[in-house]
Length: 325
Image (cartoon, rainbow, N blue to C red; front, side):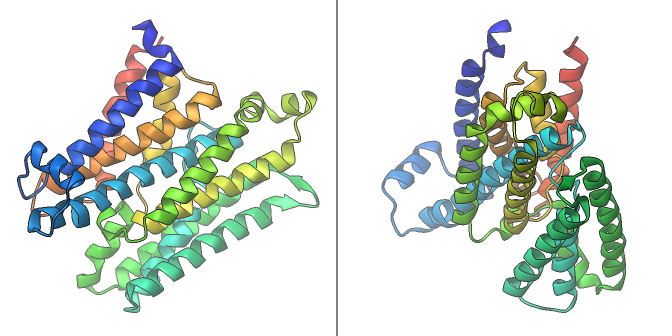
């Protein structure tokens, strides 16, 4: 199986897996629709109920799942090279905590979806500004202070989240828990997320050689002529941007940003020129399959997709680790 370590072969495999995951997402649901019927509806849409199910329900949902998984995987890969910490994930710096406090507060006050999203966005941006402001001092940026500030902020937000859940009426708690564990069904504006993924993903791949050097250590990167501080700041804000886009789309879906880059590395890919696009593709198909399971396994009841990302990801990573020398 050594040929699988070829990045080009892996890219082709993940492209095929992405298409397969999208087909599976379209095929499975509470209403049985044949594959032939799905292809016919995609090519020649009509005004019947089946067409509405495909175009208005399933297709937007799998599109949201795929782009959200790609965003989280990209954010995880960027933060892991920035912090040089294999445990870094998109939520390690408190961005999800700030967004969650904003969203849950708005829900507690009975505000509508628009205000909930706006307050959630404000909370995420405030967390980004606080972490950056406290870790950047007089032209010097300490990554240890950055990480510590993010962890402390996350702990504070967790306390506030617990307080809000305690004070919330029982009929609001379930919706809050779905936001905290991820819920793709609430996704509305999908196109901005795709645009952000395309732009940030392209920029990251363009700078992939510098990311490879930075991964060796910032002193090594300085020795080789890399402008480390601007690169680190750029990585931080790019990772924060894609994390916020994923949060606004589907809430806090855990584990994807942590495990997907590790799986790619365990497959033998460490060059960021290949690791980033492979992570985006695998993160997308991984979350699409997880969301398909979440909505059909106990249909008509839907489960939080974050539960399935952990249930699928943990054994997958453990299996790869057990076979890795």
